[in-house]
Image (cartoon, rainbow, N blue to C red; front, side, top):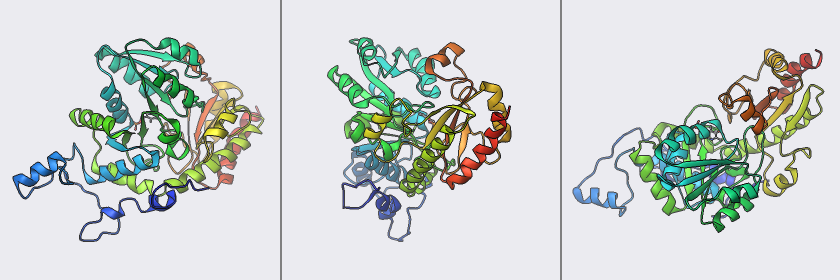
Length: 401
Ligand SMILES: *Cc1c(COP(=O)(O)O)cnc(C)c1O
């Protein structure tokens, strides 16, 4: 089950469990300490020069780099099969740093329609104002993608697994088309995570993560990361430092602690999600389940080909009866909280109509396929029977109406 690790012959779970341990100092702490300092001292002007020019490993000022961020960057870059990474203060910080590293006034960006609400707000409210032109296209329609490309287009922005309908773009085809036209591809890999879709498989030029979600994995931090080639990441680092988007030590420390169990958690998230999806599919109160691991998913075959380690940690489903049925369901859930995020160890649910897709008009929501009965589960690592039992208690009164 473990993905083979290229370096040192170690399995992923092994080196994840040892993250940061090698950076231990002369005092030999067993795990990497928190470097809660904003600035670093120097013995001489010569040493200051050496560190700033990269001739000696070291850090100067935490807005530009610090040990806890370096450990997070190395770990995520390695998971993704990328050369380098840049840790940011949030997923949005990572996304905006990556976009501004590539785009400038007068350039054009193509984004997948139905992308995360925060992302479309960033594009429409902020980037457009800076003179960056944006087109939204149905990323499953390669012809529409090709037609949207103009001489000013620089970048295609896609999600490797979409939220909340769990759609998979045919990334190989999208990347091929983009590269043929001289464009770069930026993948938001937050939902699929490098466990399912590492950069070296997707072929994108850069990936971003909301580390807040599955990489951190415990609902206790905010961070983001961008990974890609050393050349691209050095530009991202400059933007993140100049705009003050770099990550803080404590969040990176928590993220590295969370990452130690990432392989274990993802295996369990995916196993549980598959079981929950199968349970929901059989339930009479559920109209439709959106999960790539079910044969009923339109991209089941593509998912089997691409997602070798499981079919994802999240499941969405349509409750028969729309908003009033969802209200009954919510009232009868006892252990699964309504929590408008995802990626923690406990199962949570969100209601896209009132959370991630709240700002869209009914027509826009229809275009994205988000109905009033749609519920999204972030399946946790509990015993799956307990997750299904809570869902059963909440769905039974919907069915009995
Ligand atoms: C949450 C999320 C983000 C933003 O991340 P933050 O850490 O909340 O800033 C970006 N993309 C996707 C797909 C997300 O789910």
